[in-house]
Length: 191
Image (cartoon, rainbow, N blue to C red; front, side, top):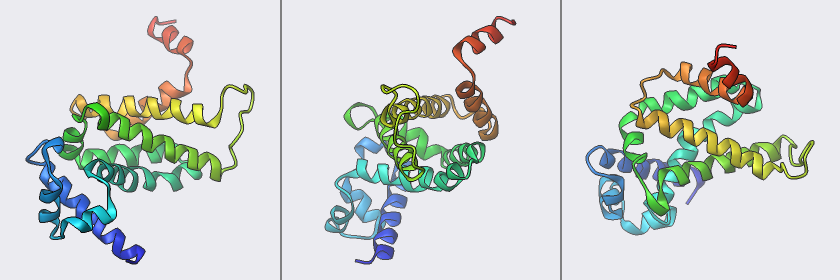
């Protein structure tokens, strides 16, 4: 199958999962339901994905994270974050349901893994592959740290009903990441 054909089927399966998630918890949706909704046979699903959690991972990578990469690479971090939060907000029902996934295939674990992979790829492509000041602070640990913080912000925002506008949330995230704990505490104390 050509890359374009594979991508079209991936998108079809992703849309089917999203539609089904409107009415059912993701953990209860079967592969048969996804393939029936997408109008393909079960073996087609397994030619593309191992299970529905890998399909969810594909959705997160292709719809949320991959579009951010060019913005990050061009130093447009604010715009990348706004794009991320706006995309999640646009698919609010789906991501609210997805955020409820717990256990081995939790939404949190899937998102962290995806963000870490994207960050490591960006570091590698940008030549940021060694620690600068501290040997312990490897690109892998930096990616883990930012994946963890991004995941916390995204999931907390989703579970709180997305009441903060995407642009404001990007500003909040940047504020937290650019200020030391000492700065934040001092500001909270009014110093």
